[in-house]
Image (cartoon, helix red, strand yellow):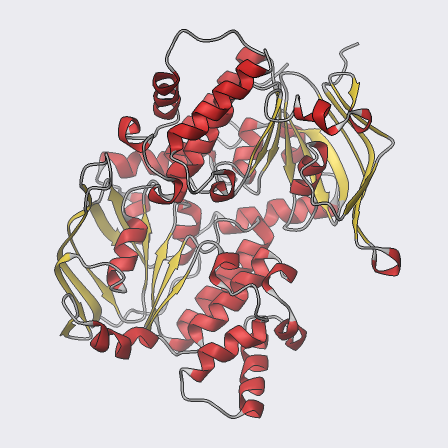
Length: 549
């Protein structure tokens, strides 16, 4: 009988001491076999990531972990000393985190990280020393995961790469290890569907070549169905059901699983039509270009190339395209966080060369909601204090009125007044993003730029945040630039869509027209990926590679 590579029995994790101790994992049981990909799906806070981190001893020191059995390749992991466990983790066991930034030393170039990986593997004697120079091996791996200009990118610092490019670099580092077990925590969240397909196909090929096992944490139902051999559904620290991928989607047993699938299906359909759009433009962009100057060995980089478009009052315009296509750069140019060439007209005024004094007067009217809500709040201030700071910009000073407005804002985004006293780390990702929306709308802006604002949220939370965005946008009649690589989200949210590729605007038009009749070959390639979505004709057959028998 085939023995599992990983065995987990009655795994429990708790935080705190005495009466304040809170258990967050309640007796998790899982098996994982060589050559198998086990998907874990569930809402934010269900214990998906916690399970993987407990397996790899990556939980903080105040975590209390107990188990009846926790084995890797026959070895009882709790019995291993830290030194013995260190010989497994980072060599035979590896993890890819959702947020790549924390996985890199900000003071070291990308190439240095590859050198450390190669040296670690050779020190452990896991693989023979390669005849190929480390730099050449690193560049080859970076090219394999789709990093353009890898010869230059290897000499950059982490902050000089976009989030998507940095995630690819992290995946390349893990591929360099060729581990027996990979715990992948939302590893393709920051990638567009075309690159995601390339990366997951590469994952599947590597995994089968090494006969490796993978725990794949995701909120993307379509990816789970196509990539994973079996899927475990978690909620509130418990495993509700485990089944082969096809069986789970065709005949889910638990009511919560049915709810997740139904919610994902709802997001795959277009939203109800918006009211007719006022034709008067809010923004007019003409021949907009932006070139970043050379940095170290990296040559000057033209991020945007002669982009012209208009943003109308009261519409949601989506910017779609792969990582590095210029979506975020264009959004920041609109807010004049960069100094582009060309012309940006806002409410009939040319703001392209406007100085800081003039820009300060219109900053309140132009707001941004970021991809990572945690990073946009001061960790030392409560939610009430952060919202209060924003409200003071409106001239409000009375403490009682401020408190009342904070309560009203929290209730408007479907939170409770109790959330005002909480710090960022005490809220889930979905709750933090709701507070970020409240902070943006409290200034009564004309435009909100939402930069991948729901990409890190699970399906059920994402649906609620998107509905909230739409509701507030229509209620206040504000315009929105919605940056996303998720085509289903773009279709659900946007009145018009602009497709960017390598800094160029390929096409722009009404959402359903773009989806029904894409003109550019790149757009057609992007839209073909929808065939693998939950409502697509090829759901569960994305072609990442054959599954285990």
